[in-house]
Length: 331
Image 1: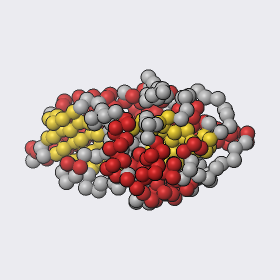
Image 2: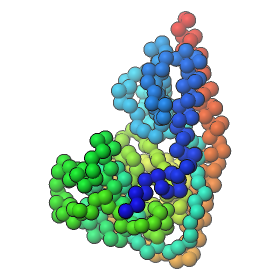
Image 3: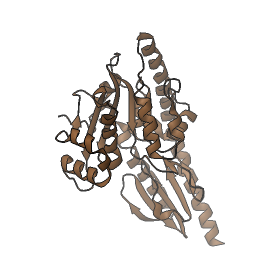
Image 4: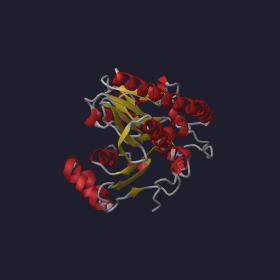
């Protein structure tokens, strides 16, 4: 069975794999020059700095660190963060231009209801597989569940059992159906092709239940650039932000009202009902969907062009913050 992790077009030697490193390096060099003390850095996507009781934290592609929730902090992120007590320096939406990609694919009609790709194992992610069986749609989709244990490296079949015992005992019947089939993958072609062979794509984002932050990964940006309607299981308002930034979210084919629900369980239930409703494809619809995603690709290209300027402005903002801090200290 081919493990498709990082084997897709957007994750194979793509600029989006290294953008966080370069941003961390740029911010670090600037702040050190202005006498900020670096208190931590993984040199990949997360670093913290202090000066005169002020904290600057840069955290990319991940949710905020709650250990600083009550601190006097300047927070730099590509995530949409709602915490009013923080001074947030937003990198979005321009930063998302790094995910722009000219996908190579054939125009084909779908032969399955949906596609859904899940790599990391966790109780909630695993519940999606159980729900597919419960709703009798597993065989109607192109689905993966690798059940990867990123903490301890446990074999997928063992981790699958532990996640069942911990939080999924109500799915006993569905669990029996999957015994001996984990890791699960029911197709043998690239995931872009699986999306195109499907009527809809279900995106299971990395973070799903935050109430004050929305993070987007390549999972979302891949789907936005491929000509199929999609449903996004992420935090509340994940779809709203995409719509506000100008992306076509296929509102006339997908009821995204789940996006307004605070409960992850409610969002899952509503998405499942949407997932079961087929879209009748023909050549006209294929052309229409291609036009929509061309709009999305063009928007991402504009964001990519604007990103260097946005990063420069961010660095200038940090210089101003340093100057204000220095003036305050002298006073």
